Image (cartoon, rainbow, N blue to C red):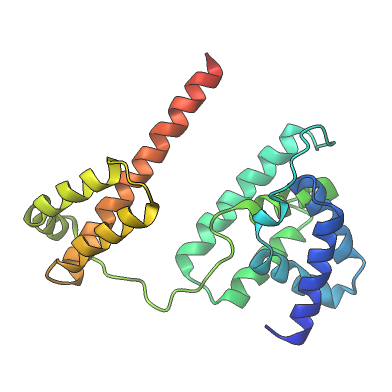
Amino acid sequence: MSETDEMILEALRGTAEQHKRSPWEFCQEVWKLMQQKPESEQERYFRVFLQEIDLSILADSGDGNLPQPDEDCFTEADAIADKVLGNLLPKNPQEADFYHTLWEKLCDSLLFSDEAHQIAFLMRLWMDLRIPYFHRDSMGLEMDDAEFQVIFEKILPVLKKAQFLLVVRFRQKTQRTSLLIELANGLADDAERAVFWAFVISRITLSERRIAERDGAKRGA
């Protein structure tokens, strides 16, 4: 990180220390901080904020009674952010180009009618798990459905062991992960390991979705 970026990061951290009660309040103050800077510097503050400031900086906060914009503001910002990221990420741009595109969207008066919508968009980007963004040097191993299925059936006994390890209780998380790594390392090649980890990730995602649906049903009851 350059010396200038380090200075920007310290300014952002100082803002967090003063305004750490909610993501909305913090992003409001970050917005004000950017607006106080010369126009030529504002995009750099935006990039450093998204790249270097993690949501955990507000981990000790959480006052739900703070003023918030109306729900439509968040809904519109969320829809725009999801569409922008959905279109941009598959192109795998360089990191500088990625953040520049987001900055252009943030400054687009046709997309955002007022400052509140811009701040909501900034907050939505900051809280998205796809940010910070990283350019991929490789697009990874690709295979068609038929090849995937052949390998899946071949390593099915190993996948069943993985399924068991995902649901059985351990005293420590490292026990589960180390045993999964052992299973993966015992496979014949990268193609088999890719199918193995695809299976593991899909099972974790499915489990999280079921938990979310169950919690949602409980809140609605």
